[in-house]
Amino acid sequence: MNAELIAVGTEMLLGEIVNTNGAYLARELSRIGVESYYQQVVGDNPERLDEAISVAEGRSDMIIVMGGLGPTKDDLSKQVLAKHLQLDLVVDEAHLEKLHELARRRQHELTPNNLAQAQLPAGATPLTNHNGLAVGALLKQGAHSYVLLPGPPREFTLMVDRELIPRLAKGQDEYLVSRTLRYFGLGESALVTAIGDIIDQQTNPTVAPYIKDYEVTLRLTARSATKAAAAASLDELTTRIQARIGEYYYATGEQVTLAETVVHALAAQNATVSAAESLTAGAFQAAIGSVAGASKVFAGGFVTYAASAKEQLLGIDPASIAKYGVVSEETAKNMAAGSRRIMNSDYGLGFTGVAGPDELEGNPAGTVWIGISGPQGTSAREFHLSGKRNEVRVRAVKSGLMMLLKQLAKTK
View 1 (cartoon, rainbow, N blue to C red):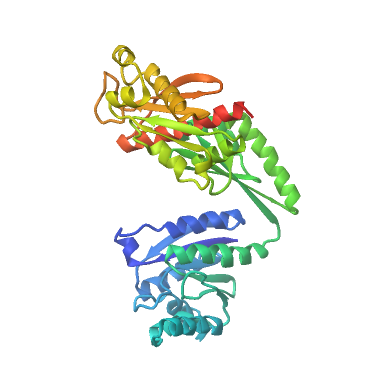
View 2: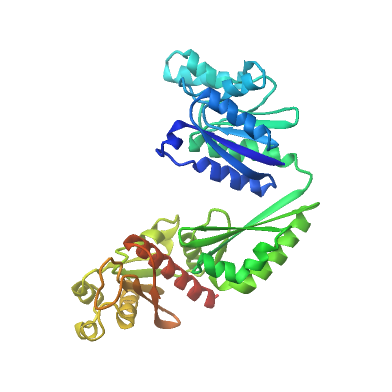
């Protein structure tokens, strides 16, 4: 089966918002073996939406309309689809009661446009809106299936996850098992060089790479008559991939982040971390602190932008900074060791470098030294990171997280 996605909303055509729903749904459909070859974006115009549906019917099995289910005059998706299919709009009683209950709580009368949110094309299966009022719909007519989904992402994602995907998955003849592998430290060209042949030769299982936020995500999906067989296929493929790029791997999972992985690894070893940051200005500590449970592993730290702050707060010898410079291996190591010593943590990290756009001490923008001090000793690594100022800072933080994760792996 293949699906065509039609996003409805003039604001997308004007560039006022981005069609994130399309990307999300296409990814979720691929997990259950539903391919998406085409996507359309159409404004709040009934004639053009009807035309888009007709075009989709000529090349796709399933037509999914996203948006246009709200109470305003330009929310016309269900009306257009019903007319297109020559169906009446009928009221879904469960959603109507939901609207009445909301009105009772808010002590106001329901208006006709509110009531329209409980309507769906006759014969359609209602899709419950867990975070809003407009009912979704799934129906089949002839050779095609049709889906109506709300536009607001907070409503859309829940309806996709809880209503649409489970129903579509039940209609598949095979079991599909997906696995998401996450990597940091290699770019797109390095990825293609390392596993390009695996990507090019994929059949079953499939490999879908995504490059985002300086990370690489590989989604592996296997089809088989049993879940066990599909999982076994993924195990074999994972082994092949890890043999080539395993040094950049940090976690398996759809939502997990590098910071979460580090916090969980620290917690598993009852270890703590602190940091002294210059160019990253506390961003590493903010990343750690954003993870639930960070208080168990994060001792605290320092933001030491100026050389005088490094000397006064971390006790770094001014002569060392004068000799080697702020942007140096020695300063990064001294920052890491000073943070660890003062905070009495198991690990300490030190970040120093040139975020840009100007040079510092003859070092070009993107030059970064990250020190790490722990049970294995104190060391530092030099990075040359591309991008604008804040891009360099983000990549520096993630580089530090990855250094720490590798150190923790050595002490398991």
